[in-house]
Each structure stands twice: as C-alpha cells, then as structure tokens.
Amino acid sequence: MPRKGLTKEAVIDASIQLIQQQGNGAFSLNELARVLDIRPASLYNHIESVQELTAALGCRIADMIKQAELEAIAGKKGQDALFALCDAYRSFARRHIGLYKVLMGMQKDKSACTPEAFREMTMPIMQVLSDYDITPHDRMHWQRILRAMMHGFITHEYAGGFLSFSVDSDETYRMAVSAMASGLRAAEEACKK
Image 1 (spheres, one colour):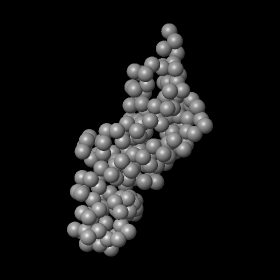
Image 2 (tube, helix red, strand yellow; image 1 turned 135 degrees about the horizontal axis):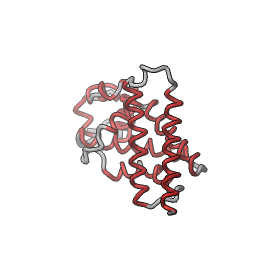
Image 3 (cartoon, helix red, strand yellow; image 1 turned 90 degrees about the vertical axis):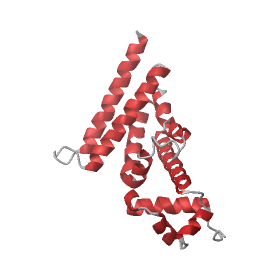
Image 4 (tube, helix red, strand yellow; image 1 turned 30 degrees about the vertical axis):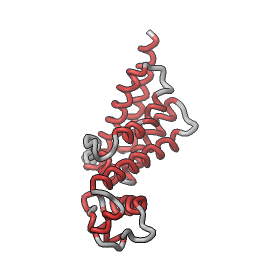
C-alpha cells in the first residue's frame, strides 16, 4: 500500500534534491527510499519503473532549464536576450551540475525523456534567434551552434580544462557569446543579399 501523502511528484522532488546534494553518480534507489523513509520496494507503489523515474527526472530538469532561460530573457531582445539566455544556461549548469549531467546523459535515450521535452527546452533559444532576420532553416543551424558552444564551454569548465591558464573564464564566455552575436549579425547581412 502506498505511504499516505507520498506522491510520484514527491518522489521526483526527493530525487532532484538527492542528485543536487550527492551528485548523479551517488544517486541510488536505496538512498532515495532511505530519505523518503520507506522500503526500496515501496518506491514501486509510486513509480512504475526506474525508467519511468528517469524519464520524469529528465522532463523536470529540461523544464527547469527552460524556465530559467525564459525568466532571463523576459523583456529582452536581440543581443541582450542572447547574453541573458547564455548566462542563464551556464548558471543553471554551474548551480545544478548533477542535474545537468543527468539530462545531458539521456539525450540519445528516447525512452528516458521524450523528444518533446528536449524540443521544449530549445524553445527559449528559438525565441531569442527569432529576433534575428535569418531564415527558419538557418535558425535551426544556429540553435545547434549555440547549444554546442554553451555545452562545450560548460563541459570543459567543469572538467578543469581551463585551469591551465590564468585568464578569467567569465571573460572567455562573454567573448564566445559575442562571437555568436557577430556570427548572427553576419548571417542577417547574408540573408539580405
């Protein structure tokens, strides 16, 4: 019988908290059950399977990123929105690196989190890119370039790839976003020809 008051949402909330506290590598159903003060087998009264929990976690994390980005770009346009979006994405990954790693690890696993959740997560990016006068086809390429730049930077930063040099990584990130903005302006000019 399910524990009174415990819901699937509460299980997801507890999972999110555990990953943030212990990292995604240390997360386990046994630890989750201990935190929720139930037997591990009792988790299945609230979730159908580990895959269902993983999918729900992925969808929740994708939505958290989307909401952080939407909040950051609210009322902004063009380059201001681009910088705000990139800062929000990096800030989320830095504050929630365990959650970020969980999400990035499931992008190819279509059973883990629906492709729709990942498409929704790119919605703020597409919104920012819609401020630029480029074709819809080019916009799709630019969202990939932007996502690759942000993720690549975060991956190198987290792995310590920037520690060998005493140059400020925040300045490097601003330069990378500036390069994106310059590229988008050049793409606009190319579309006018």
